[in-house]
Image 1 (cartoon, helix red, strand yellow):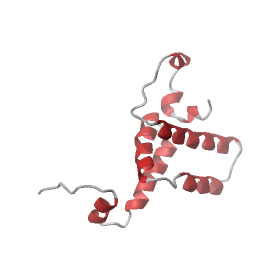
Image 2 (cartoon, helix red, strand yellow; image 1 turned 90 degrees about the horizontal axis):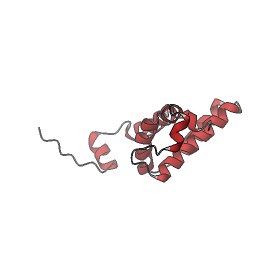
Image 3 (cartoon, helix red, strand yellow; image 1 turned 60 degrees about the vertical axis):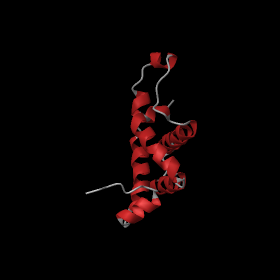
Image 4 (tube, helix red, strand yellow; image 1 turned 135 degrees about the horizontal axis):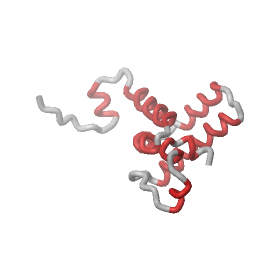
Length: 117
């Protein structure tokens, strides 16, 4: 329950919400499991007073995931209001595009350049 309360969305639900379905975008089970893994670790880290360095190391390993999962975590973390996970996921994308030209970014993420001036 503590891990679920890291989500601003889930924390805002009252006890009656447990009796009705809650729409969670189109979040896959794998994405939801990954988000809950993040919440569980950070909840434990807070309770056990784990060092910032250990948390950074864990976050780095946690985000050693493929692009699809990163891009699935961003809207899930946003919808569920898990700010730390949203920030971490966006940082991962930022790091992937930092220092790249627009063309390199398009190639990296298979984006079609359909801009016509």
